[in-house]
Image (cartoon, rainbow, N blue to C red; front, side, top):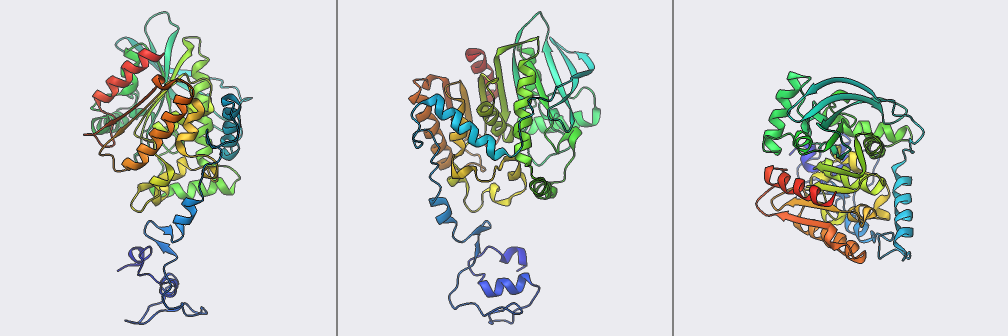
Length: 400
């Protein structure tokens, strides 16, 4: 058994673990002791258990009571609660607002498609970097409803925005993107479908993907760590950029700013409801395959425990105040849709139920339960296939 297998098992005693991690070898049947260390107390349990989790993780989870959640907070005025909850989230993003930074858009290559125009646009989402995005505009006079599309993670970094919009500008990326859409989206490009349906669409790369990558999978933790050492945050940057992108889209002359939606799948779904919580520019949200209770997700075997991709969705300290559905609820009572797959291995059914119950309670308290669309697709896994897309599109038409 290698070190990687041994770490995290209950049979790994404290003394033997220290010796292995220090490079020592324990004799068969003997309890190894690291140089200079005291022998382990007989019967001692592992300090790290399956996951890897600290062996006292049940106590840490029990301590999470989410005191700032609506209903737990002493604030009983919903608007006051929203302000307080949003302020707490924004503080823990670490990354400050970029309100004074001009977008300074530069429009590039254009192509006329079937019923809409595709174009590249480069803009400043922060003061540090210019980001290339894709903008789709339906034919006609407008103003149009709009959708901010937010791409998934998928451990596939060569494409980002291209997962959602057909990349007419790059044949290599087109081949990669077509394979991705075949796997998760029934061969469709969701952005192009929305544009044909009459929506202005904006989608940009998050840091690490497409034009801003490609990042290697095992570099994610180092990237996040470096952000923290520099007094910043990878997840906070993504949250701020997404909120800024929503503001840019809503401010376009071609857009009806009262009818802007955030739409995403997987990590993109997380980004969608997070953007709705942080930005009043989002009027409706469709989040497919990312919503759960935190405690139910933090269990051995869950992908979150691997780290890596989790750093794009990790705001240190936030669970001391709010759970995931509590953050999404900052957007209440605006229309929100949450889909999950009953066979999705990333989000346990009990976590989805916990989150949906919490969301339902908040919208019901606002007498707006009809604006909350919660659905589990029992025969589907972690996908956003054509029938799900069709229902999302119909729902968007009905609420915007």
